[in-house]
Image (cartoon, rainbow, N blue to C red):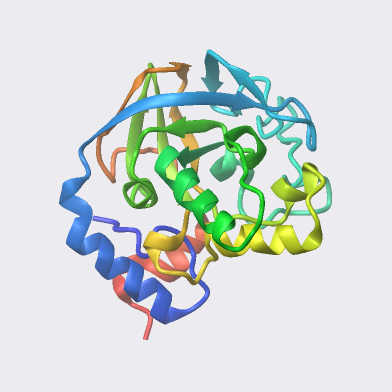
Length: 238
């Protein structure tokens, strides 16, 4: 069975092995989660996120969101692929983003400790805020997530960048403080608070307060990003 190592790409072997070992120790604890707290979409890159009571999901992502893949095959987020320019990962693997309520609280507490203004959920530019421990959310890479009548599969941990604080006119110093507080790619798994990217397994509708359930790691017919195959298969890397 394919087992994703490190919950997404990490740039060093040490980080991948550390995250893999954490997953091996904790994987059986993940079975049922709590509810959706908030839902957000933004129709165009750079526009504010709008709170909504429900979202419609198809095989292009969330209908009406800037990362939804259109009939021509392109999404319209700032990091989406463009004609003649391929994004870092396939756009299908960034169709939807999740973030943990507890992760936001911890990240904002860290910002306060370094005298930086906290970020509210809408400013973080994630689609689905859930009442799930942030470590458990990070562990859902490769797992199928049932939410409302839709299903998703975790693609990678969604580490923070400078764009969210930049879009709300924070200083460059605050932008770097945000990245530091919410965790970088080589930080321990428990320090990465930026959320989870996912792709759609089954279209459906998600409502605020819907329960979130974890199904399995191997039921999704759509493959994970290519870099998983390069870095994660059976720990073959020497």
